[in-house]
Amino acid sequence: MVLRLLKGHARPLAMMALRVGTMVAKFLLALYTARYLGLADLGVYGLVTGAATMAPWLLGFGVTDWTLRQIATMARPDAAACVATRLAFTLALHAVGQPLGWIVNAALGAPVPWPIAFAAGAILLLEHLACDANDMLLARRRALMGTVLLFVRSGLWPFAVIAWGLLDPAARTLECMLLGWIGGLALAWLAILGHVAAEGRWRFIALRPDWLLSGIRASVPLYVRDLAGALNLYLDRFLISLFLGLELTGVYTLFWSIGNVVHNLAVASLVQPQLPAMIDSAARGPDAFRALERRLRIEVAGWAAALIAAAAFAMPVLLPHLGRPLLEENLPVLWLMLAATVLRMGADSYGYALLALHRDTAIAIVGVVGVIMSAVLNLVLVPTLGLDGAALAFLVTSGALFAIRFWIARAWPENGLPAAARS
Image 1: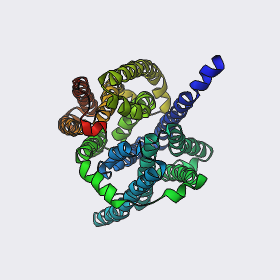
Image 2: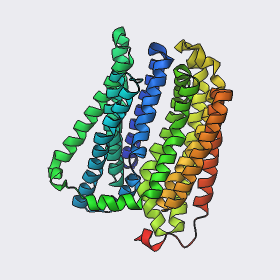
Image 3: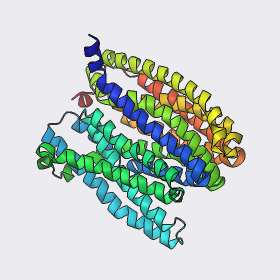
Image 4: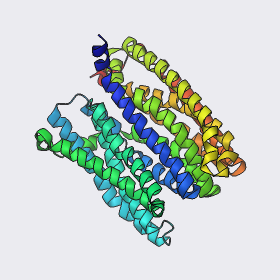
């Protein structure tokens, strides 16, 4: 009985362990950067991370979630062709967009140093493609494989970079860090190509531009949501760098990373892998969906309480050892950001619920409201209150998004989904 129980829980436990490893690696990298490279370099790393996370949303035209819903029930040959089309679209966008960015950088006198610009460009491309591939694996119920690849591209290289820097002081540079990031992404893509080559999966690769064009037309509300989500989540650090400088951007990046560890462990590990099940339960009716939503809500709340308590206890002990007085001077900002993280977890969890309920227009409207609120609050509070203002803007915006998305999900009509969504 015990062995059967352990076997039944082996997959979710493995996924949780890999996600924990990834989050620990990113957190240790932030601490290493703050201690050995400096807060300014941590600020630059935070900006590159923000840009890499925003790229799939800004350049995705909203078709990622639309594709996810489409391929979830397709036969393997059709799904493989649609995935290949989606990835080819991403590659084409970067092939056009990145040279334009380089031209702008040159015209402005290279405010972004070229080694950083080219390394960041490679990271943006490979991360965008990997993020798309991970979403497609999730839709095809390959959550474990997607989690393994996430660890390969995000969890392995920080350990290598940290070890490299500790052994060789000359490697304690931003350029070496970005090079390690590129190496991790390249390793992940070798694994993906190996998966495609196995069992002749490459035979199913094809391009379906008409299918993709229909998705772009249908995904306008989702694209508005993505644009709003990207700006809402990462606009603050760019405004901080503009108004307060790179060192305080580094402080904010480190504190945000602490909250992000908590967020990802709860939401990305518990809620996101359940999206296919949420879509299926929504199609079966309110009772099935409510049961799954209630279970996930309880699990996320439990994890949030435990993880926030651990972070609140550990950080005041850890920060003095980093040798950066700015971190300790801004410790109240951390408490505000941890509170905001709890609300962000609720908001993002119910964002997945609205996606499963096909509330695309509501998703877009709520996203626009959130980004306007975030932008206004940051523009007013960051110049006047500094990092405290940015944290307050994060807290208020996250709370508003949570309240609105929760209300919409709970107000779902008892007659279930529209007929088109159920089919």
